[in-house]
Image (cartoon, rainbow, N blue to C red; front, side, top):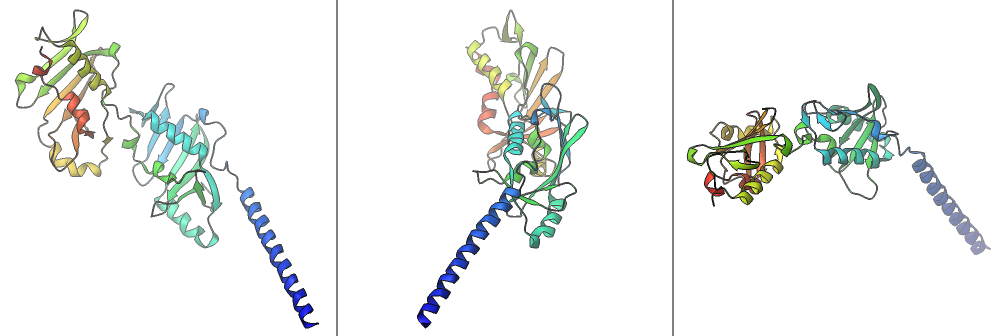
Length: 312
């Protein structure tokens, strides 16, 4: 009799455990389904024409001018980075709200160190939220403006630190092309070499072709390859004010060479290139005597041609 009673109790306990497990599964599914996956998305990204990003670095604006995205109404934006930005907004989803025990501390962290993101359609603010990550840069949190519930956000199928994109300074959003001229707007190019002025040269349109002034028999193939290299050269990155300090002493020296491109409207674009430093793999340049930019050495090698190089 005692054995039968124990068996009944054991079966009853097993049934209760199973019921609890089923209840737990359905409860979790209900919680997951209750999360709005579109919480931080906009209904139509193609209508967004202005983005404000206000983080720990200086705030800046991305705006669409009808043909391209522009940073702070001054510089063309990196088209690939803009594409990644909107793809991230489209794919990022809240995985779960932050637990009650961590909610207040994470919210404080987001509002103190995060990036405030505002998306506009014309003058209408269509989405307003904050983005931040943990100190280890392994998790990303989104928080709607005016709300007090941060969400852990991921891109399904990828192990990415989503917040990294929102932490970039404005200099990283600029198009990295230096001259970005079109051949129909090109007028001339002058290259000057400090301490070796006999190697200076000017390229201009002569007798239906581009040629080097004062050098009648120049190698056309080398000349065209050089102009292509100049038109396509990209910096690795523009330096922010804090980052440029390590290059300050070098930027105070004379450049190794300078290239000035002039378009048909007589606007000039100047790039100074400073001597390489053995301890650094990058070459320092300065655009329009104002903005410091670093280059891959191979990129610079293609445009560091002297006058004698073009002779036959």
